[in-house]
Amino acid sequence: MASRVRVALAASLLACTLGLGLAGCTTPSHSVERSADEAEATLEAIPGVYDARIGPTKDGFQTYMSINIELSDDFAGSDRDLLDLVLRQVWSQTEVAPERYAVIRVTGAGRTVPAVASALTELDIGWLPYTKSSLSMLGDDLEARYGTWPRSLSPED
Image 1 (cartoon, helix red, strand yellow):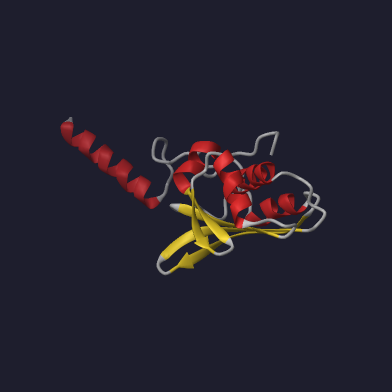
Image 2 (image 1 turned 45 degrees about the vertical axis):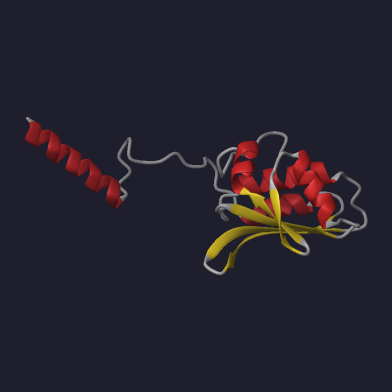
């Protein structure tokens, strides 16, 4: 009897390893695949958002998520609301995974790094200076606010 259990367990582990997807072997996944391009298009539809880019980039051996938002002078919203919407969209795409941190850069329409930093602080997202024009956001804070990546879109997204 014990021998049959070991054989069944070994077969199940082998099937999981081979990716056969037996019940209990798979991990939960995002219900809808959503590309970074789709999230970018949603962001670029916001009046005053001239360009939006979400992509992976490397810093030495460390890969991280890079988010670049360029605003036109027509943008009239608040930094806090903009960043919350941007980060909800970023968190809903399934293509570019965040690692330990993500870097954000918001330019145009008079935006400054201190203003972006202040907005992140209002959202309870810790940040560190990354370059003169960008900030590194803590992955744990992003997950605490937006849930486990990737998350499904909600009606307010």
